Length: 185
Image (cartoon, rainbow, N blue to C red; front, side, top):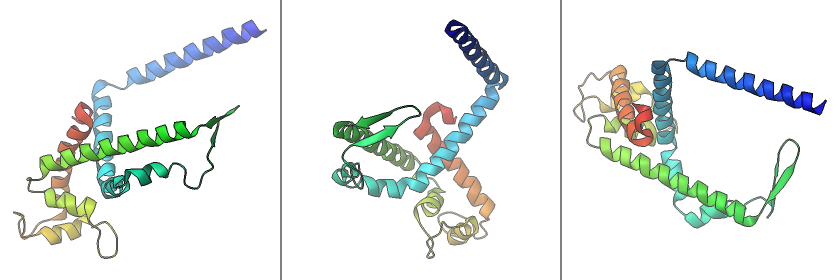
């Protein structure tokens, strides 16, 4: 009986793998490429929205690492469906240090990408949209950004919000390539 169960399980796994490959092959190369490009664009925007908070979070490495133990017992238990494991302090600290280093790397990549567009006409759009809050603490709307920049920084006096978004999209695409590489092309 156990052998029959093993054969049926193996058959199910092979069938599932075949279905996954068929599904992957049903998406043509152009569509896969477009999906990767869209994800890189969205992820670049997400990184920009979180950039200031990430920089602030990284400002003090000691505090960042100490957060691994704040509000938690010294031994953290991880549960899975049928078991549990206890992480040692060294494992917790190693995971936190890995997180810190990934965050630091993200900040460097964002800063490199920002530096690459700093002299572009639309850089101020990026600054206002992603790094500046309105007096009410909200993200500036496209219409507000257009009003703020109209007649300044080389923009026409009748700058339209659609133009602002178009310029922003162009710059985000440029940055996405520097942050995510060829997946963003």
